[in-house]
Length: 296
Image 1 (spheres, rainbow, N blue to C red):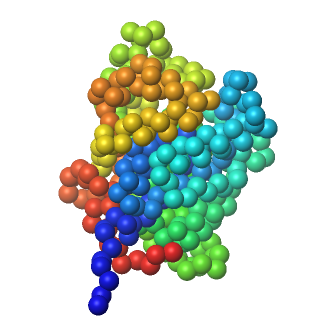
Image 2 (image 1 turned 120 degrees about the vertical axis):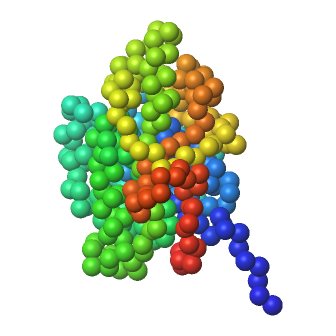
Image 3 (image 1 turned 90 degrees about the horizontal axis):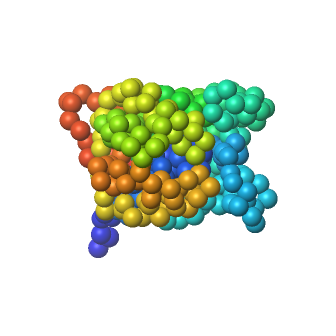
């Protein structure tokens, strides 16, 4: 007697390749959580441990370093989001553009692109994802680490299927789809207009006042997929709260969090590969994905 066929989502694997602890929640948390709940194996590569992030001393109590604190916050969030695995590439946070951290010898932004791409390629071959998700070409808000991860992930996506590129002893694997997480511009434009009412300058947003939402909202990438995460919005908020040292609780309770709950509980994606052709908006990143690939 033949065994029962596995449910579709339980045969699927998603790999998110990001740069810092909190990227997984603030950018893609709803997507990761909703797929994990559906039974997808959701894996995360985090390139750094966020060492350059400013942290109030109160949060460091009990931790030997900023890196240790931020890794603990990530693992807290990963548990709530339901991630199957978290993997660090071991680079150092490069900080924002112009920061002295850019010049640190271990900084991700200073690492050779092929070196970073080779490490990501090995994880793709090991984990066999059908779908890979990373940052958009400008790294969301022009963070050098986000841009470096974007560039390395694109190279790795192509390389993983070719055993002659970055040989590592593992069998080649060809992921089927590559998406870039994009910031929802319509929501950002609304935020730029509304935040000043609360006394917040959208040109100096964030814990360190180093994010220019006005400039970001002026850049538009095409939207090919939209993930409605309303069923897991509370779970995403709980994961956000794990990143207390990065203002995670304030993002839930503050003006930005209020706006997001009122007007936007969705994450948007640009599909890089295969190139979109029919102009329709996907509601599922695994749409038209085949499941006849081997399970690791």
